[in-house]
Length: 470
Ligand SMILES: Cc1cc2nc3c(=O)[nH]c(=O)nc-3n(C[C@H](O)[C@H](O)[C@H](O)COP(=O)(O)OP(=O)(O)OC[C@H]3O[C@@H](n4cnc5c(N)ncnc54)[C@H](O)[C@@H]3O)c2cc1C
Image: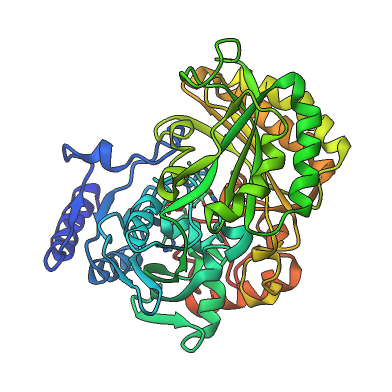
């Protein structure tokens, strides 16, 4: 087949796909193509042959069938937030951004959300009823990649991961079948899509358990100058270790923004921040945030605020379209030595990646650790902290320098980490086995062999079918 025949073949096949497709197809020659292939991390520059913007589950089935039958690399994009660029390849891009339907059943406390929803959209819809489920801490993060990879939200300390709140899902598998997965149907698949990423199919609908919260919560950020950082961090660690799961906190070294509430001397300088949310009635939370306030922050924004505002608090620090290198490493504890190492590097990293780079340590909580390890594919529930260097910059000329700083931070902290990686924040593809451990990885491989023996869905932290060559 010469290239002209191949092009004609493609055109004919594309016309077949187009017929009956309720969304639309975007091709390289189309005006909107460059916009349609953008993902969060501007370092990712892939050119899919076809972008299938799906508007229904049927569209997803048609796109999966098309990709499989024509031997194309298949990629699946929810919110496009994979910093590793896992949601875009060079074959067919199955874009779920048209799957936005959401229904909130207030009696049953369930949200049924389309596979292309973003967390800001889901939070808005559920908060209209004073309900929520733990979700992404930046509003533009996709529900799809977040939930299938685990999903830590601010309220996970009490209510678990996003995947722990998944009650059932509609999944399009590699053979183009639409199946349900839940505690009573296709239970093996249900186990795998909660932490196993997009390895087993395309999730076109997520049904989440909802919990009452808000719309007003006690939450916000407090900041200290760096010279206070060692004692404030130690006090935070002691507080976080002793706190009930209703108090969810994180510490962060960031560059203080040029906002009116920041003292002039701190604007543009590295500062230590403590972010906190009380997961419950704001009045009941006041005594618990008092010890943070007693540490005398230079900026104290911890106050009653809409939950949706707190969920958007980090948005300005993570705008799409920047260059990014992010890592997620688990820590069993935050020792004094870990604090010292962290403070030796994090302010310099923030300055080097001015103004958006930051380094965060999240406290995890029993909402996550109380769920048995074998309940789902998700692993490392025993870790108590999650450490994230988040390098963000504009120019390609800074790529090598800033990635090296991010790696150095992660490697230096490695002596304090458990060795496990959170795959949703892992740019490398060689840590998948480590992330699950031997026994779980073998179970995942067997599941992959059952649901995707040809490894059609490999644009992810890939689990190989059992019989695939290593
Ligand atoms: C700004 C920002 C903030 C973040 N905040 C948090 C946070 O607070 N907590 C946290 O735990 N993580 C967080 N993350 C990491 C986040 O969990 C992952 O990046 C996640 O993959 C994002 O999901 P997505 O749908 O946007 O990703 P995409 O890039 O669209 O997809 C990522 C992977 O998931 C697959 N996928 C996507 N949707 C589906 C679907 N419906 N069915 C099957 N597979 C699918 C893709 O094929 C790909 O392999 C954040 C990331 C960013 C960039």
